[in-house]
Image: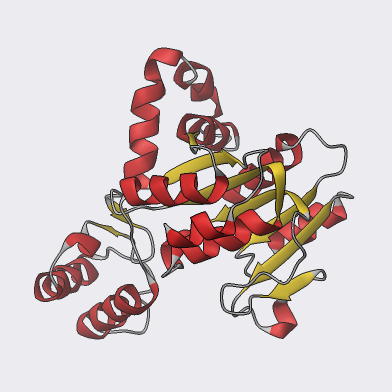
Length: 254
């Protein structure tokens, strides 16, 4: 199983403390985590905007715009893996996640922010921080040097144009400060950064790197591993919805 999938699954099962928590995978794609979770006997559900019907897992609901088609306070845990960089209106999406999450429930999200260095959709560093003309020239050079994802069957210029179009139409990077403000407004509590925990989990999943996990677990290295994660992969946040409940007006007005 993909290490990111395994991480959100493991943390979802342990997050709520419930014996059989109801878990929503927000942006579930083909539903690998949902399918795996249900095969293990847990109540996993999924929502996504455009997964083909033939690839949707059971217990899947398509998103209706930003609306999640489940009742209020239905889930103990919501997870989201590499999704929020594709969300054009985070406050509206967070408003819905908060609505379907129980008071005291947990939202676990992994995604790149504007602060990330590596552009994980293209497979090269810093291109998302460049003006278009410079970015195109940079991508052409990367293609010719053998860097970047999904280059097969495309010339350097075709690939550069394709990737830039993807970045301009389907990727929305937001600043960590804005993200934290939106998260806090939606859930009534501050997100807790868990990048160090994520990095340790990734190391433990790798037979080649597993031996380093004991060294990296040292508290003195936490700022370093967290920084590397934020710049290479992105933010990893765990947020608990305030037991006081969800204030829809406050969230949407943020």
